[in-house]
Length: 181
Image (tube, rainbow, N blue to C red; front, side):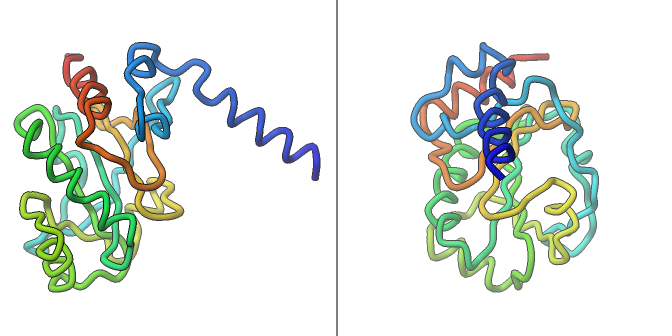
């Protein structure tokens, strides 16, 4: 047991050892929780449901930097985080970048609308992952989880838990990724 704990501690301490120094230099505040991978990892390619009921994949955002957020209507930290994601989408969203929110698990569309109305958010997509196939494919074990994907749809960073995505540090990290062509 002790060896397992020591191995886990070592892995945790060395996980960011080879992370992109240009991005790690921008980490402040909540963004210190952002785990920046030493090399891009394959992003999930599992279909999920658009607001209109049709299916899509993250490949539909090809060529854009994507901040993929997994959330649920019952998730208290999600309620705290969503306004920050909304502000980020307002400031940086466009042809180069999108905040993509996906409610995973049992989240009825009317409950999702009510949730966003209650917190004053009206600019984030109402995508759903009712059977949690996308979340499982992405290795999501708790909520919220936010994954930063590069233009090729590869995961370059991940944050477990809520964060202030409208912070100067978050914006600087995303703008640095967007600047890469």
